[in-house]
Length: 76
Image (tube, rainbow, N blue to C red; front, side, top):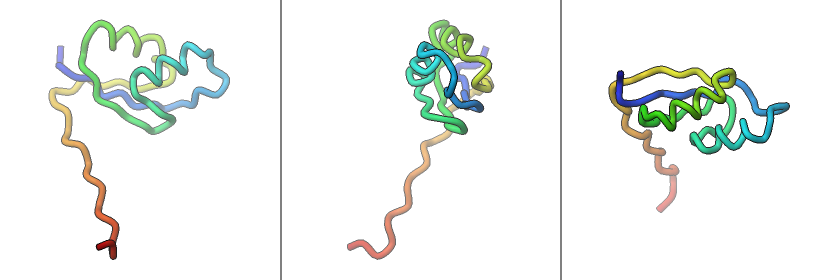
């Protein structure tokens, strides 16, 4: 079993039960096409299982470094 899960939200929460929305929020997902890397623990796996129809999941070995935002051009 790999140490992390890459979770991507593929469907909206419109029309879903409140518990589904809370679960996605707890995973750190904010809307369709948002993605997070979480530890592969029983608690996260259970949360993902509740919303499996709204997300895609992939086991990964390592988490990529966070992307840095480019500095605004022209600011001093």
